[in-house]
Amino acid sequence: MTFDFDTPVDIKNAHASKSDFLSQVCKVDADDGLAMWVADMDFAAPDVVKQAIIEETKRGFFGYYGIPDTWREAQCDWLATRHGWKAQPDWLTPVPGIMFALALVIHKFSDPGDTVAIFSPVYHEFAKTIVANGRNVHNQPMIEEQGRYRMDVEGLARDMPKNTRIIVLCSPQNPGGRVWTVEELREVADFCLKRNIILVSDEIHGDLIYPGSTFIPTAVAAPEVSDLLVTLCGATKTFNIAGTKIGASIASNPKIKQQIDAGLRASGTGSPNRFGMAATQAAQNHGAPWLDALIPYLETNRDLFAKQITRAIPGVRAMHLEATFLAWTDFSATGLTFEDVLHRINKKARIGVSPGPQFGPGGENHIRFNIATHHSRIVEALDRLEDAFSDLG
Ligand SMILES: Cc1ncc(COP(=O)(O)O)c(C=O)c1O
Image 1: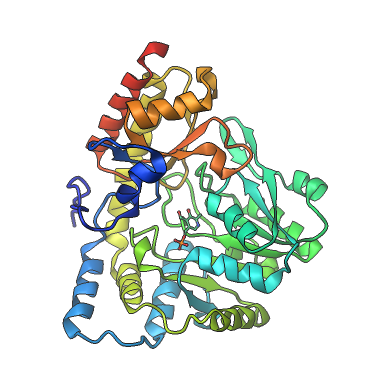
Image 2: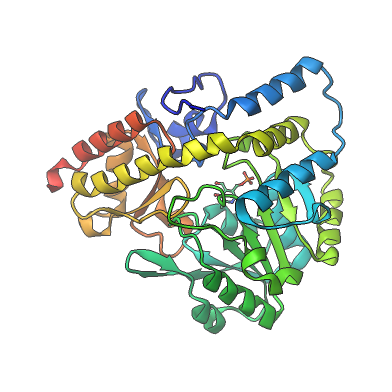
């Protein structure tokens, strides 16, 4: 089976955040601006997903959706086949997005004024959601060793406030692209067990793994923490269907599961979005060949970007990604101020990116580039960056 990742999708009038907000958020006003920020891919979703939505539309029935066993089975089969996790269907709750589920867990398992800990730099919405819910954030900066991050669990034990109720893990890590090892996951899990802290494992990037690394769900790596564990996952990043807003919360501890279900009811969220459910099931039941073709395509982008960015801008280095399509790039050795770096990227190169500081301590002087785009756009972006920083050479 062949798949076309080279033909741009026509997103004019598609209300795509990534392009519609390019000017407002990234200050890239040019008509030829390149959007390398929001974590959507520039590829069309697999045909099997498009077909499922067409079928749903043809029928013409758009009423409330009953949560079918088929959704649970699709998610469980996917996890068992791809990641060796035999999650039971009754551990699953469908949620309208990962961040919704995180907010719900925060509500249910902590009180206002309590602390939620994260390893930074990390997906910026974690801290925002924690604060928006009246809890404090404890950022535990990761340690960079030989160009890769590791979680500082010792530091966490030393620095974490006593009122920390929840630790949120990003597995694999966004940004930085680490695929955590069994030992690393166990270390965090043991820590949670000793202190009786709820562990949330956000595994939404868990399918986007490059050859040479193996993603292991926290529930598999550290089954001993299962009673305190909530895993958040789904098909949205994998198949580029984030706008369909369906994710899965998985908790094997029935008490935790009940709390999550109660929280969902309390939120007024009843039956899930039928298009999201159709898209998710089609993707997980039939989309594996598309994903298997996508990974080498992204791998080529990853390698090209990492190699050429260092050549294009002296001193700049992209962290080696074991997972994700989010290239985490360090500009500190350019000697430029961060404002200057960002200005050159936005205004001279006309590229919209995610500024590193928003990901918390450790993100200073970094830029996150979304490289899930056509090869030709990576080449174009690198050419523009080379021009924008040509005086450094
Ligand atoms: C680690 C991580 N978690 C959650 C999300 C957002 O998920 P959702 O749109 O389902 O809330 C993202 C989006 O980029 C992400 O990178």
